[in-house]
Every structure is written in C-alpha cells, then in structure tokens.
Length: 511
Figure 1 (cartoon, rainbow, N blue to C red):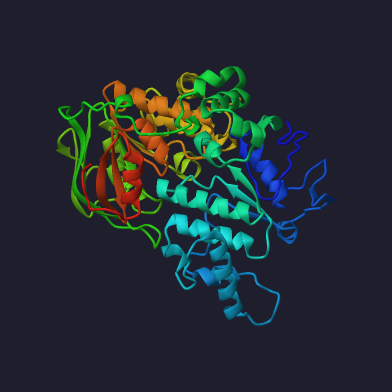
Figure 2 (cartoon, helix red, strand yellow):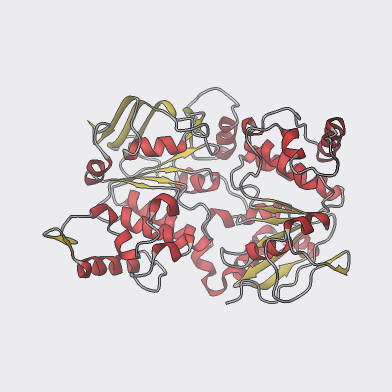
C-alpha cells in the first residue's frame, strides 16, 4: 500500500494552504518528503519552478522549507536566543548582537514581542510556538509547514496564531497548515487540499472558499474526506464550523446525584523537573457525569490521573470512592472497586507491546479465573474473551495473537479501552483519550465515554483539547501549576473563560 500515491500539490507565496485528511491519509508522509525526512520513490519536487532534490532536513532548509512540528523542539533549559543560535556554524564566533537584531526583525514582521533572554521552558505554549516559527524563518525559509499547530493552544493562543498567519502571508511566505479541525481550516485557509488513502481526493480554491457559506463548505469537505461514511463523523467537534459550548448537549442536572469520586485537598509530589505534581486539589465527580479537566500540558495532569488511579501516593488529603477513603489502597484494590485508568501513554504504559492482543486485554486479571486455573494459563478462555472484546470495541487486528505493538495508535487505544472498560467499570479516569487519533476513532472513543456516564458510571476526562471537553463535559475544571484555578460550566463563552483561566487571567471563580 502506498502512503502517497501520485500526489500533486502547488504551494504559493502569500497563501495558507490547508491539508485535511484522516490519520493514514498521507499528510505526514507528504510533509516528511518536503522536510527531507523521507525520499519519494517517484515524482518530482520543484522549488521556484526548478526541480529540487531534497535528501535531508538540511537540504530542505537550504531550499527555504522550514517545519514547525506538533511538539516543541526547543531546549527547555536554554534561552530563546540560545535556541535560535543552536547549530549556527557559519562563523567561528557567534554574533550575539546580530542575532538579537535578527530576532527583533522577525518579531516585528510577525508582530510578536519575544524576550531574547527568556528561558524557553518557562514560556507559555503559544509563545513557544511563536519562537518555533521564528526559528523556522531564522535562515530565510519561504515555505513554512505547521503540523497541527493549535492542538494544545488556548482560544487566545489560536487567535494569536491567526494574527501571525496574516503577517506571514503579508511577507509572501507560503504556509502549509495541517489540522484535524475543520472550523480552523475554514477560518485561515486560502486553499484546501483533501487527502484520503494516500491520494488527493479533492481541493478547494480561494474563489470557492470565498463564494460558498461555511455550512456548504463543511458538507463538501466531510463528504470528500469520508465518502459514504460521512454521516458517522458529521457531529465530531473538530468538524464543526463554529464550536461553542452548549449546556443543552451535555448532562447538566447532576447536582443531586451521588458523588462517586471525591478528592479533598489532595496533594502529590512531582517527579522530575517537568512534572510539577498537584497541590490541595478538591473535586467531586457525580454519578452520570463527565467532568473535564483542562490545562496546558505539564501542569499536573499526569500527577492527578496517577494519584486517583493509585499509581502515585498522595502526600496529603483524602480520596473517596463511594464515600469511603481509598488513598491507602493499591491499584489492584481500586480496580476491584470499579476504578479504572486510561493512560495517555498508550504504547509505553497502556500495553506491553511484545505481548499479543489477547494477553494485553486481560493483563489486569492475571491469576484470576476463568483465565488462570490452578496456577496455569487457560489460553482458550483468554482467546474467547479477547475475541469478544475485539469485536465489541472494533479493534482492527489480524488476530488476537498479533503483537499489540504492531497495531496502529488508534487500535492500541481501543485495546486499552477494551481492557479498562470491561469487567464492570464505575469510575474511569481518561487522560488525553483521543490525542493523535483520527476522527472516526475519536468519535468512537467519545461515544464510549458518554455510554459509560449514561449507564450510571462517571468519567474524569483530562485533556489539552478544549474542543473535546466542550463536546463532552457539563463542567470543566482548569488546572494550572498543579492547582485548580477555576471551574467553568459549559455554555456560551465557556471556551473563552477556560482559556483565560489557563493563561492566568481572572480570579479563581466558579462560573
């Protein structure tokens, strides 16, 4: 199967060209070819109308192609200026004064103010992204590739990025904008190309984008992306023209419901410099509720998830399940009470990649009947259970004997979900449940979360994707530096209020 099959795309200076398509559609391969990470087997790349061979990232940079990846490539301990000067080999001595002037020049071009001596790791994600863009332009890039640039930004950060995009267009830069979020694509695109199964399935020119209303454009793009299955994903948040919190779409009459999970002034220590831990967190998760936790990555989300699951000890406070304290219970004991944890590290922690799908699906029940009898494994019983779960959760695998590490990211996530949501779960902690998944799998995972709550369970959804939380949750807590800094009820302007709390604006309130 070809990752890219006879793909032709034209990038023009002063335009934002959006690439849309599911995971596996060929976007990443196309970007890898342009950035020099992958060599094409056939076809031709032309820069300024002349054939260009791009065999390495250095070749791409020399031809004016810069890439800003989804995850930051800045060295956190270094300053902005030091990050920009990394790899500078044009002279024996670094010209710091000239570098400062160059930074000021690019900052003025983008209309952003970046302090050259600020430590990169201490900058907000939106500011880090601006530095990444400046870094890509540092050596004169005229084509800029932005890979999922809004995946972890606040609404305010998205607005700042859109301003930067306008300045890049004014400077004649050609921008490639990759996103899963259709409403963002329609807001910034001058041209759209849709990929499916490695081929260009359709495109929209600037004149078409300007002539048709957003609703018509959305319907056309969704049809091109998904064909006959367009209806299956039509209501996923990432495809909406405008996403606004709507309390009517989520369960809001939960005030009288029983609290299944409670945290009372819970603290837990961090691990390493990038993990701040949590401090004095209190929350109540009620029966039938999907409670969201928003925040920029690295603000205590992992510590919160692990302390609830029992993987990290609480240093203070009390954790209650059905009203009884459980902070002294281990992971296994909490699982027997119906508490489950779906980790964000699906490959490193969620599954044992070398083991088959079947064993991964019963990992939490080692030694238990009917899968173990008299100390011996009953492979037939395991395989029967595994096959049932594979069918129920639509895990795409050649067989239950296939090694879990060979599956796609979406199917690995389904294996983790199938394991954690079987055997009568009551309260489930989801950490970035759909991160990096295509829209079809995203829809499936979110439906699973809704079903859990609808059947009398409860879900704590920790996510950096605000669209996801607005789609699922009636209430959203905002986490910053390991503390809850506010609570927002879903509804009009909820996204803006969450964004303000994420970046430190406003008092600690319950909106």
